[in-house]
Length: 187
Image 1 (cartoon, rainbow, N blue to C red):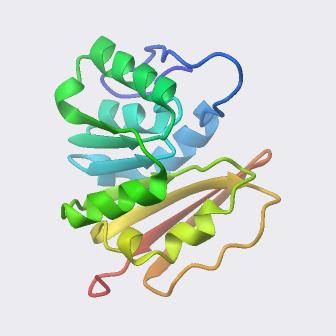
Image 2: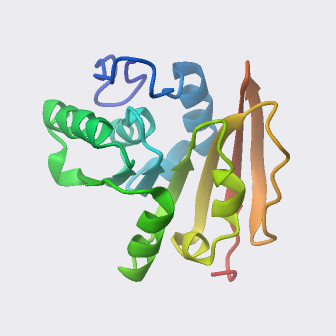
């Protein structure tokens, strides 16, 4: 895995061996960042189910001000910490090692708000549907915040609350990407 664009362009990302993590491909990341454009600049970003951290580090490379990485796997968190050190961005990174639903509850209670939330759970899980209807999750967005979801193309149809308006849908092999905007006044 490598960073596609921005100040860390071309830098390789360490990853966990053994296939326990499915990284977001360069093609998918390029499509997402092309779509969200300047919204990334100075954004607070939440990378749920972070895995390699490819999305979050790409966001930092392109101008995000801070990224919170959430993953329950300690080894994965160690790789993300190592990458933050290599890139010299430890002061812009927070790593939360816990299950996603517990993490969003804690982040919301601490009044964290994010301009962009990236969600890429394991394809076989039912986490996406549970997340988008969770009130703690819904309250993590800044006004007009973006929700970027990566999922299995053949997965179940996702029902999204009315507070989110669809901005983009793309298909890349067996991967589907959907981007929603949290509507103004719906917080």
